[in-house]
Each structure stands twice: as structure tokens, then as C-alpha cells.
Image (tube, rainbow, N blue to C red; front, side):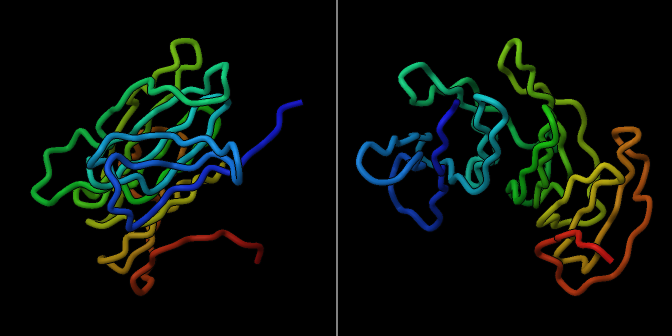
Length: 184
């Protein structure tokens, strides 16, 4: 049986390089990310850790190694869009082996597949998120919900085909920064 430990992402740190903390108390393992990366969000898929780095606009990917530590596998751009504004991944979610990234600045949702055989993130698609500042997203079997903060809009996309041609539906919401789907 595998034991679990918390992995936390610092914010507002001035340290260089950035260090995530895996575990707590004595023996907690540091996970060191490159200077200037600015880690903000993370997802864990089996023995792979994917971290959205806001300052470097990339995804850092690590793999758990035998001694219990983490080894960098790769770094990939969070967005392939050439945007006028700085790109900052603002939300990161996983569903199975798929990784979804909301990118402020580019106004996009990028989708990657984590190939467990090679251990690498493979870009699948990137599409407009319905606004210029997607701040959060929820991956649900019935759709992909995107909070577009500065556009005061929540956009919902079908997951049947990626990339979707357009939002399935949209509705106004004042400066949405977070979405939680609850029962009616």
C-alpha cells in the first residue's frame, strides 16, 4: 500500500529556484523547480506531477523516482499561441491522462495527453476559452466549464469533440474566479 504525503505550492516566494514541499515535518522532500518558473497549480497522475508555472508560462513535469524524490521529465509551453499579453497558466486540471490548462493572456484552454508509456506530455489541442482571462475551469463528463474573469462570463464547452467549434452555452457572471458544480 502506498503512503501519501501532501505536496504544496508556494506563492509570493522570492526564493530562487522555487521549491515545492512534498510531505511535512522531518524528512519532507523538496521538489526544486527552475528559477523564474513561478509554480502555481499542480496535478498528480499516477507517479507523474504536472505543475503550471505562471511566470515562465510552462508546464513542469516530474516523475517519482525510487528514492521517493522527483526527477524532471520535461518542460513544455502551456500555450502555443503567440499572444500580445503575457501568458499565465491560471488553472490546471486532470481527467484520466488528460491535462487541461486555462491560459490567461492567450485566452485559451490547452489540452495535453500524458503518455504513461513514454512519460511525456503531448499537446492535443488548444482552443479559445470564451474570453480573454480564463481564471478557472471544471472538467466534468458533461462539459468543460470555464470562468472568464474579465469578460464576466462562464463558458461551457462540449467534451464530445476537442477542440469544440464554439461554446455550447454561455452565461453572465460578475468576475468569476472559481467554479464549483453542486447539486440542484
